[in-house]
Length: 223
Image (cartoon, rainbow, N blue to C red; front, side):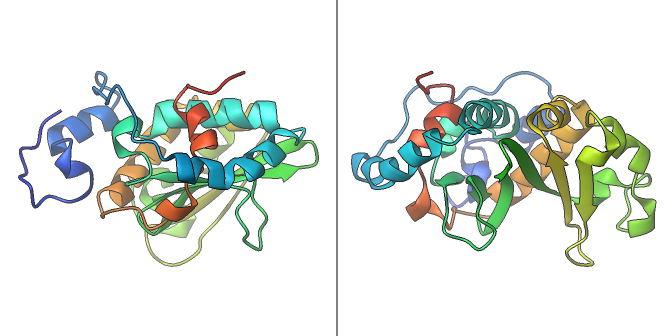
């Protein structure tokens, strides 16, 4: 990694120049991450009770495996940028009652919910990555591609929260969530949205970062 943008750069540009970011976006080569994390014992203890409550949920094994897949696939240099440029919350106290939520800057990136004993996911991405012509026209959604990203078409739904370049994809079932995260075009779209918001500046949700959950995103969790 290098810092060609200078000390006044914000977001990921402090660690990765645009060429490195573009290479990661397109899946060309691996980024060199920090060997050690900046941990906080106080923060870890603060959310430990919620983490242990999460572990008692029937969805916990699948959830932690999917989080590891997401962390290793969709977040650049996750150890270097942990908490400061992305965070994961555990059983956050919001009205939609998620199990976990990943954020960057002021934006939600990825959320997992209980769906009976199974899971459902919400991905927030750029609309232009899922239209047939790269436009922001709702009618141009590439429905055929979207249906191929999951095990069954009924596992997927979507929403347009505004007229901007924002698109919400909802996926039901752990198997279909994994299938979505194994689709090259979908991975690229998730990466591009995450880069957009990690480059906007420091994460606004640092105070709710759950290190015990992040352990699994970074492949350091105890089975």
